[in-house]
Length: 160
Image 1 (tube, one colour):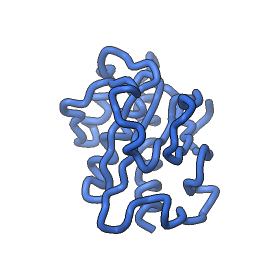
Image 2: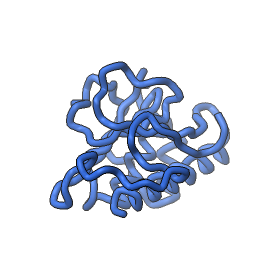
Image 3: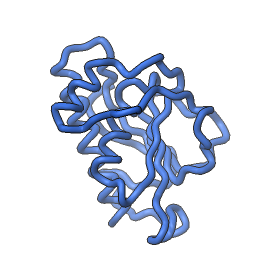
C-alpha cells in the first residue's frame, strides 16, 4: 500500500470527491456523528485515528476504534509517537469488531486493507495508510502525520 489516501465503500466524500454527504447520511446538527475507525490489529493506525479524532473534534463526533483481528495491546511506538504530539492514548486498548455496536455508527473508516464483514449498513470510507508495525520510528511518525491530516480533513468535510 502506498501513502495516505482514501476511496469509497459508500456515499462519503473524500479529497477526490468534493460532494457533501446527503442530509440523511449524517445526524442533524444537534446530534454528534458516530465514527468507527477500523484497522487490522487495532494496535496502531485505528488507535491513532481515534486519539486524533478525540483531540481535534470531541465536541463534534463520538469515536471508537476496533480491529478485524485485534492484537493484545497497543504497540509501544504508537504511544511514543502520539506523546510527541501531546496526545495520550490513555485507556485505549485493542478491541474486536464484535465488541462495538456496528449499527450505531454513522460512518466506518476502514484502514485495514481488507473488506469489512458483510452486512454493515453504515457508509464506509477506505483510507489507504501503510501499516507501521515492526518498522522504524520514522515510519510511525510518517503514518501518524498522515492519519492526523486525514482525520482533520474528515472533520472539515463533516462540518462543511
